[in-house]
Image (tube, rainbow, N blue to C red; front, side, top):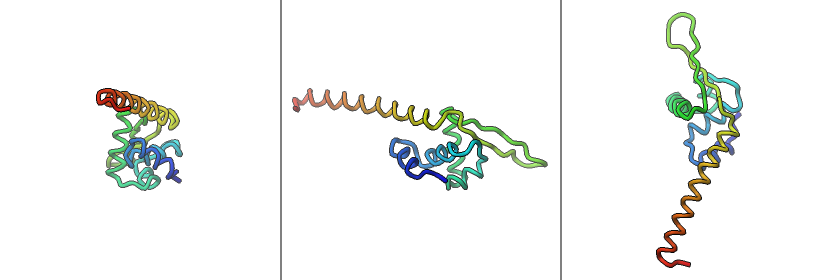
Length: 116
């Protein structure tokens, strides 16, 4: 169910494996409980917890608590609130800025040492 090539590319542009797999999985389903993410994204529970926490901080997902019948902890459900396309656009723009800054520093270094 997960597009492994997309996950691989997201990892190469700087996301960690758990974030990439969680994002790709959530982009394929409308909403998912933590346990569904574990299964669908092939992650362990701690990985899902850390990924969803980070994605909430980035304001890319929303968390909702679902009340259980009887006692016990409520179940958490997650959904993307920013499209995967917009997230990728944000990542691409950020990496392009980093690349431009690096090019400027390399250029300055070359000028300082009279290289070229």
